[in-house]
View 1 (tube, helix red, strand yellow):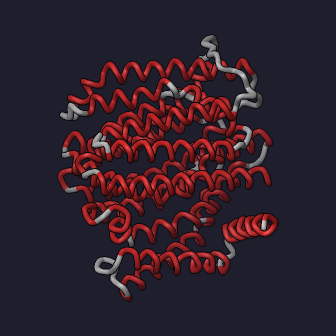
View 2 (cartoon, rainbow, N blue to C red):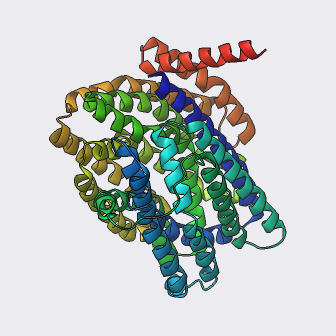
Amino acid sequence: MSNIRSSLLFSFAGKYGSKLINLISTIFIARMLTPTEIGTFAIASSVVMILAEVRLLGATAYLVREESIDEHKIRKAYGMTFVMCWGIAFAVIIGSGGIADFFNQSELQAVFIILASSFFLAPYISIPNAILARNYLFKQITIISLVALIVQLVTTLWLITAEFGFYALAWGQLAAMISRMILSLYFTKHIKVYRPRFHGIGEIAKLGVFTSAANIVRRIHYTVSDIVIGKMGTPAEVGIFSRGMGYVDFISQSVLDGVGSVAQPYMSDMKRRGNDIGQAYIKATALLCSLVWPVLVVAGFAALPAIRLLFGNQWDSAAPIASALSVWMCIKVISFFSPQLLIAVGQEAAMFKRDVALFFLLLVSLIYSYPLGLTAMALTFMFNGIVEVCITLWLLKVKIQLSLKACLMSLGRPMVVALCCFGATVLLDHIYPFASGSPLLVFLLLAGIMPPLWLLLTKWLKLQIYVEVTNVLLAASRRLMRKS
């Protein structure tokens, strides 16, 4: 258990550090580029992000899930990633002109080529990262992530000042991938396995066909709106919607990324030990909701002053989108651990079928809701989230005999905490109206009131998250005292 907590600590440190760097980057870029420029790049990045999920085709999940790994298995994983990554890179480069024409944006062709170039480096990033994750070496993963983001930030801002426009965003991502590759190989230099092996990669592909396809479909949930709006609307609209999505994604992933990176090794480890992973899922979900829900409801209600503070008044129209999407994320987080759980028990096919059905539902909903406005499109995400949770809970009940009653009852107290935090935010808005007040003052008020209120509520309701948070804070304070 101490190994898990240590991994979580490093994972959280890395993810929060990454989020801070990304936030700084977003604040500067939002003021240096126009919504149209950011929207144009968002169209290209949304397409490439979808392809990024298939490039590994289960190689990382294969290395994490296996009972044991050796040089033979590592070389097979390299072989699979080489086939997929290099194949996709060439396909994107060759088809870049046609994809740009599809969106009626000829300048996107160069962006596609730059972004596709990073696929050539991916094998020597993903495989070392999987080995590090399998061994809970999240300190090294954290260093790799933070250094790469700093390189990306410096490169991007320098190129924007040199008037590269939105092309600077693409070159910044490529620079980050180069630094990730160098550090990934350095931290796994004791495993001198670099040559790919192509014989027998069908074993990995069998796992990867479903895991990678499911990852693509889940990732599309965050990017399909950019594609639909990019085709039916304007780059400026893409920029506005992606800024609202980005705000909610930043808030939620600040917590979810730290937990999610440890979840797959943890679930697989629980399965290998023969423990009840259904109970682990219920406990982990309740723990996560008690942390994420209060943050999301407050962030959603205070979206307008937060967006003004972070990005400037030119992004005001993204606020109602962010508010609706925050509710969607509150619903979606209930099924956050389901992919890791289904992979751990070998139910990749069921996971894939669920995600495909949800994707087509979302795609059709977005197409039909676009004429009603961007906020209506955000509301379709809420509906999709409700359907996702219902299907997921039913699927877990069938596949692992998960107790739906126990799962839903475990969410009662986290919901009380979230509603109390929401009520306090509404009361604060009546005292000092957020829409007309200083965004900085609103932020300071919420930052000063909400964390202590949340901590008191979790203690009063005797939630496990209170114990975990206090243990982490006490451990950190002891380390600081020893160092001093």
